[in-house]
Amino acid sequence: MTSAVPTIETERLRLRGWRNEDVEPFAALFQDEDTPRFLGGSGSYPQAWRTAATEAGHWVLRGYGAWAVEQRESHAFVGCVGIWHPGEWPEQELSWHVVPSRRSHGFATEAAIASRKYAYDTLGMTTLVSYIAPENAPSIRVAERLGCKRDGEVDLSGKTRLVFRHPSPQAAQ
Amino acid sequence: MVPELLTDRLRLRPWRLDDFEPLAAFLGDSELAQYRAPVADRFEAWKHMCGQSGQWSIRGYGIFAVALRDTDQPIGYSGLYHPIIFDEPELSWSLFAGHHGQGYATEMATAVCRWAANDLMRPPLMSIVHPDNIASIRVAERLGAKPEGETVYLDAPRIVYRHRDWRAS
Image (cartoon, rainbow over all chains, first blue to last red):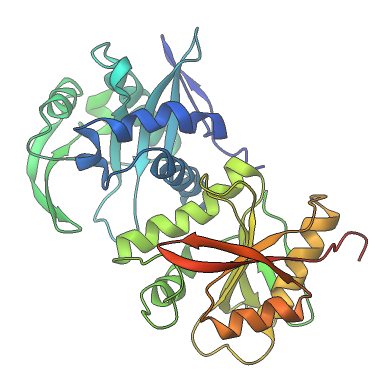
């Protein structure tokens, strides 16, 4: 088993490697009316499995990726947060996806701050962006809470995304 | 961890970032890849490559990149594909352009059969083959697999082959 995914704990959350049993709660994201438009595609269980495998494989190929996020106390699955960098994309992206039942608790912000700190302090990244669909108001609010500033637009596989640039490692301290 | 399997001519090893171009070229080749799930663009090919790597993390087994032993040039892939829609892993094999007709598919699939039987202790494996895919049917036959039934996969009828028991071989 590949166990190279580090575990990070925040006040309320645990960011850890992907497991087979994450697929069922993760599938809630793909049944959600809004999410598939942003995450790409539709469908639920098979797609959740494929996406979980894809996230896990990103760690293997790149040495970093997005974590499965759970609540520390209950181990309830919260979502998928971390760094994502497909071959063709211009930059490393910090992304967050929280399952519908766990939204509005600030979990995306909390996990994103921990991910960003890991990217800057441990991976030595010097800048990060988040690509967000213009109509994805909740995610735009998270980006604003994280101190991001608008930095133009980008075309990702034919979809227009707003570019939100994160504060620099110094400014994010 | 992904083990490394060696045959006379081939190395079965983990996927690496620099395998992406040959894999994307294969997945985008509508003739070569006609029997598998279509991959629309390079972003989909990237996700596919991550997914193949990530299945190892989630299941503990998966698909190997297969390279020539001498040059490490990737020529295809083989291994155990086990998405959630399958109730058991599938032994799969694919060759990139220019590497057919040399017995490579049989050689790599044999290595996977032995590894699955002796290291993973798996019972006989299955393979799903499109009835028009004569080259793959020949590989299945050379491996000693027998048709077990039919199924539908990716909206097309498929033959399900059951491999022989490779344990202690």
